[in-house]
Structures are given as structure tokens and as C-alpha cells.
Length: 329
Image 1 (tube, rainbow, N blue to C red):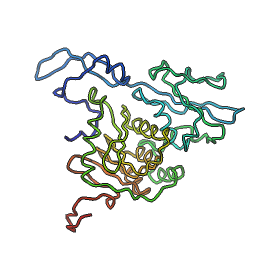
Image 2 (image 1 turned 90 degrees about the vertical axis):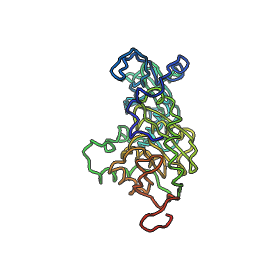
Image 3 (image 1 turned 90 degrees about the horizontal axis):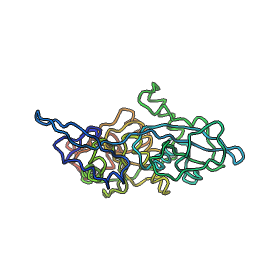
Image 4 (image 1 turned 45 degrees about the vertical axis):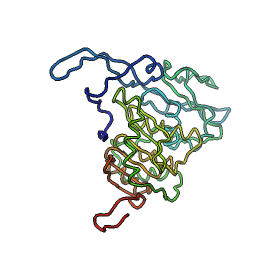
């Protein structure tokens, strides 16, 4: 079974009828029902579909000395509700704001937006993820130094920022953690199987066709963790955030699989998490390839059940034959 280049496209109307039972909706805040008019071979019929939920999430940061705490809203992202604490933690880690889970005193849903008259300590909210304000607040330890420049999203990571590739790589080099030698090897036959393994575990995508998936695999192809989101970077932040909060980073013996394309931003997140290999069902961007080469991350694109392209690190993939040399590589 092969996957489309992006999983943002809705699955065909000829696919299995969507199940929107009450029990699923009760446990999946990322899905809601939608009444539709289905057109098939010139005939129309009323039907029910499921659509992925997209709502804003604000990430707030509380930091500074115990007697002089400060609070700042640092990001608002459109995301699929669920795993929001992991998303916030992954964002803070991959953007270089924090280095270890011990940097966070507490992280939870917030009751209210920030205001100039905010009183400290701010009280977290233990309500469900679909809380009224969609806010996650991270309180950092008093000894954590936060540079003001790190409190806003690093705009050099976006494709439309207008900063050249060399400047982007230089900026990334200044914030990334020390890299270990990349000795992580896998077999080509294992890679072929990854898209199907990821796809078979994407329960929300089965019902909506509207989510990106990010999966973490070991060297033998075991799926260790999976997160889904309407945004590619959010799915990766949720995945890395879950590992970060569990104190399992850096992820030096793992493959990150992306259900869509591989951008500079996603390679940046892999770099910050210590991931040695990134595989994508879709295409990599030129700057993603540059990051892979600069920081020695094995990068694979257009991964299908029978073929893939290697953009860097072919010496770390076993089990294929070189047509030119006729030798196993």
C-alpha cells in the first residue's frame, strides 16, 4: 500500500465509510461530525463525514527569579486539540528555549489569557484540552536563563522569511546541542515497511483524511510513538515533546518518519532532539538537504513500499545493490 505525497488530501469517497460513533468522538477531541452532500457518478446523497478539528493554541512562558517573575505569550499556532502539553514542551525544546525537562517547574492548561495585572504565582488549570481559552502555560525553574530573543519563534526557520540559506544554517548552528557521531544504521527492507506501519496506526486520519502523522521507530522498524496534527510541525513537536517530558532525549537511536514532505523546520526539530535519521513520504526541500549534510543527519525522501531516495547518509543504509558497482552497499 502506497501513501499519497501528503496526507492533507481527503481520502477517496470510495474508501471505507467513516465511523463517527459517539464513543470515538468522546475520546478524540480532534474529530467532529459534518453533514455533507456526497456526489458519486453524477448522483448526490446526504451523508455524514468526520472532519479534523483545528483550533488555536497559545503557548505562554513564566520565567525569571522567584521574586521577579515575568510572563510572556510566545506563540499562537493552529493545531488539532490533544497532546497540547507535549506540543508546548516540544516547541520550547526544539526552539532552544529549554534544554532539559528539569527546566520546567510545571506545565498545564491556563485559566486565563495573560494581562498586565497578572498575579503570581499563576494558577494552572487541570480542565480538559478543549478548555475555553486553549492556552498552555509553562512555568520555568527560577534558575533557567531565558534570552528575550528566544521568546519569539525563530522566523529564520520558515520558508518565506527571506533570509538566505547560509544565514539559516549559521543561526541553527548557534542554538543546536552538541552532536554525537552518527553511527545509526538501518536496513533498506525495514524502511520500505515504515509508511504502512505509520498509516495503519493513524486512527484519526482513518476518519478524517486531514492530518499529518509523525512516527518514531527503532532500528528494527518497531513503532515507538505516534502523534497526529493538522500541522506538520505540530505533529513533530507533540512527538518530540512526549519523549522530552519522559526524559528520553536525545533520541540518538531513532528514525523520525514524516507523512508529508521534509522542510528545514522539521529537520531543525530533529536536530534539536538528537535524531540521526529522518524519512519522509514526500519530498525534502533544498534547505532540508543542506541541514542534513551540515549536521550529518541521514535524510530519505519519497519513501514508498518499493523505493526511496537518499539525500544524505547512504553509507548508513544496508541491504541494497549499487547498479554502478554491482556491490552491496
